[in-house]
Image (cartoon, rainbow, N blue to C red; front, side, top):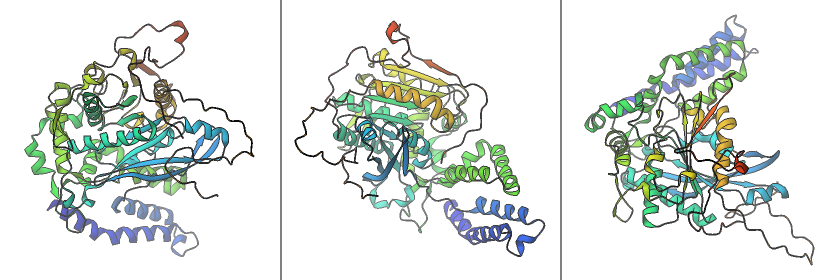
Length: 501
């Protein structure tokens, strides 16, 4: 009933929010009669704020059309490469007619970014994707709002999530020979499980895994989010936060953890900060500070857009990750697409380099929770493991904003590149005929094109310091002293030749 009540209230408020938007424009127009009122600017700001507090926020777009690669504008084409009932694998394909840039793009690493399924859409990683596109071929998991999935598709469990990740890894591997995987927050656990299962079967595993701010071991430095999940029973969650989707949506009747409840929880974590932010927005509108007001809109357009999660997946995550700690206890069994039950053994991973990243001030995944991955991945050589703690960074700061771009990303880029096979030099061919036209498609799979939210962080004036930690540090050779990323001292296995083109 709560979901139905919420939708009824939202439908009732929709005409008033639209009216508030119109009133804001009328009072904000100096050429209108209402715009001549002495308090017109304040009235317009009030109506605008009312509109934004009451409106419904739809899924945002990535909106990445162009990326700068060493001063050259490269066109970006976004397409769905694999479509599943609960997720789409999106590819950001790059095009250019600059010969030098084209050569760079063709040999760059392929990276699968696994976005979190924890309330917000994958567009939360817009800044992550945009930055990575400068030096990588980028794929990202775009999770579907569960209320849009018909019940005929069945339930979606944590096991299904893991099976999806394995399928996406194989898809990218089939195209490029191998790939790198980056997981942000929630997916660190299922991604590690997926790679572990692939390793146990003897399958080709990714060249490297980058794990950022995730609850590998939620027992360490528990946060408010962890405490809630740990201190309530599964029955409590099932009876208090699980509801059926109303009839007006394609997924009518599906049991979900509604997005509006998740959003309420997000706001409840820092209510005073959000209240102050909205008041500052009101003052910015009065002052005519369009830049600050636009930054506020961009942030909350992303922050307020939430999706429903399938109840089975949500309850599985609470139980496996936050209550029974099956991953770190070595007791996690996963059901594959063939119905076979397999035990997750992270120690079976041998040929995948491992980088973990944490924010010093992370209030979602506490200190040490992500670094715990090094403790359980005992099969990975210590020389191929690295941990980074970013001083002064919160949860979002490690994958979005200035710290991500200037502090974290350069180290992620270097780590991935250290484990990327060198491209095979092409055999030169003497031209007996006029040179062929330059191809503008650096990545295979699409025909040639026809011719012609970033989460803003507060400005920090203090110097940002990064502590790099590695389990059991090793003495580096003098010639390598200037290198910030541990390079593999010996090949762990023979990898297939990287495909290009």
